[in-house]
Structure formats: structure tokens, C-alpha cells
Image (cartoon, rainbow, N blue to C red; front, side):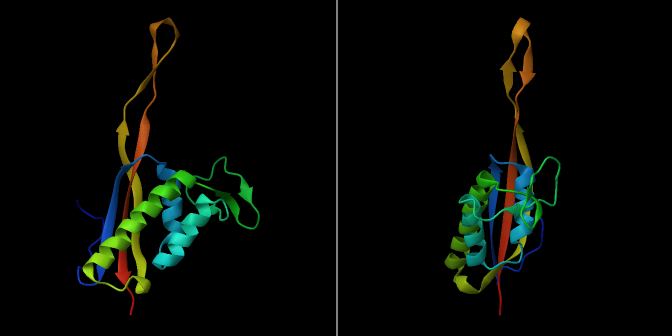
Length: 147
């Protein structure tokens, strides 16, 4: 599996979520929100999204998004936050396995982009059919030790 950035194996650990069944647009907005956070802060933030305590500011694809108090267009993408939390915990476990101090690690690079499209169809009247495709997302997280 290739990553989008070059990493130093002596200071960093990484994790990759492949073909996750969540929205690519929501994953991109969450990734932008948690980049640069420490692992514990990011886990608390993602759990707050799942519990609907924190809204994620919508930077990409703002059409038809309602405004939240004090932040403009925002939403609570719970499904994407669950997958992002799983991938972040995988990165944390990989760092712990490598022998790093998990409390001093921060997210140095996080990328979310479109994965494979799963083809589907929905039968319609008169013998016709309509596409009912499901898009997937790929998420890669690289955590780095901070001095």
C-alpha cells in the first residue's frame, strides 16, 4: 500500500482505511479539522462528533449545509467520524507496537479521498433500471512523535 507522503520510519507510524463505506466529502472535512492535533485530542473530538456535541466546520462542498451557531456551515458526520476514529486507533496501536510514546504523538498527515465505486442497480417500472451506486472512501493517517 502506498502513502501520499514520504515518511520517516524512525519517528512515525501510519494506518490506512481502505474502501470505507462513508462519505468522501465528510471525510475530507473531518480530516481538515483534526490535522495537527495530538492523538488524545483528536479521539475526544471525533467522539464528540459521534455524540453530536461538536460540529465539523464544512470547508469543502458547503451547498445545502445548515449553519451552526458561531461557525457557519457545519454538520455532524457521525458515520465518517466512526471510521476515522477506527483508523486513528489503528495508527495509535501501530505507534505503540513500534515502541513510541503515544502521549507525545500528533497527526502530521491525514488524507481522505474517493475509493472504489460499488456498482448497484434499482429496478424501476416498465422493465427499466436506475443506477444505485455506493461510493467508498480511503483514509490514510500518519502520526509523528513530537520532541
